[in-house]
Length: 332
Image 1 (cartoon, rainbow, N blue to C red):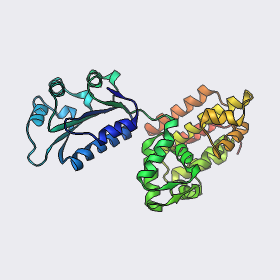
Image 2 (image 1 turned 30 degrees about the vertical axis):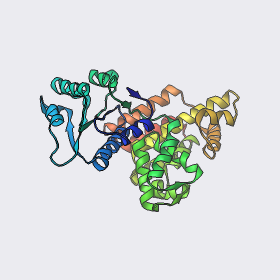
Image 3 (image 1 turned 180 degrees about the vertical axis):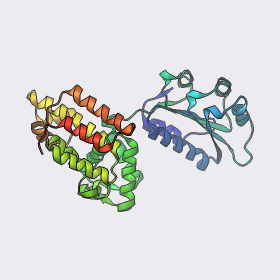
Image 4 (image 1 turned 90 degrees about the vertical axis):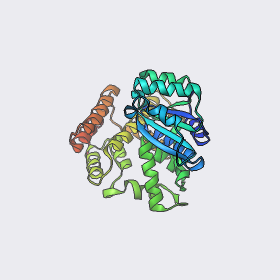
């Protein structure tokens, strides 16, 4: 059965009992990793299960059947974690589905895969039998909820504008968001109230500039200062992929705002369309007057080339300089 909300699947994992079988599929490894850890903690800590971990191609004929039939010598039962479930061999897959049909007693299974059901016959069959959650990159509308969830887990408090700030910074990348939360918690301590200055101090205060300044310089059309900002961030260790993700997210908001304003729309309409609130909304309205007008297809291709360049070892400063030159028109 397909589970559509992360919170629902997390609740299932957190309250699972003997015989449970769950599947986390899809490309967002952060969500699938969290669900697996929740499921494993449930069985290891609350139910005193032994945990066994396998890559699917490690399971030969008879292995899974033996694990499910043999009693654990040291624990109440066995939790079997299987990664790359789409690669299960024919024999292991047959043993898995036989076990599902007959029911598990003192065992539980968690399967994960980067594939989705449409790409795997095994996952499609599992989807008809057990809870399956597809781990896609979250929608932007989901990000405030993730920010609040992770802040609560780290026992830190955020000022009102910090939810949007962290959403912008993470670019819908949950791993990047989680890393930022961990750094904030370690630096400021549990129970701390963190505002923009506290965030900049920890996350983007390197080298006298920050990732938000880079975005400002690009969409205020200040090419030279944008290149300087990019170089400073790279020099002091800012994550290049995260920089691209942030800029892409901001570019989408800027282009959306420009289209609305050019059509005679108001700031309220821009807010409704982009999700931007103060102070980002005020900045977006300024960007509609200053940002260089670049054809959508040209800008999108520039972002794709930048992402590909970073992944294939092209010089990072060259990657960002090329992208900045595409998005700006030459002012210093």
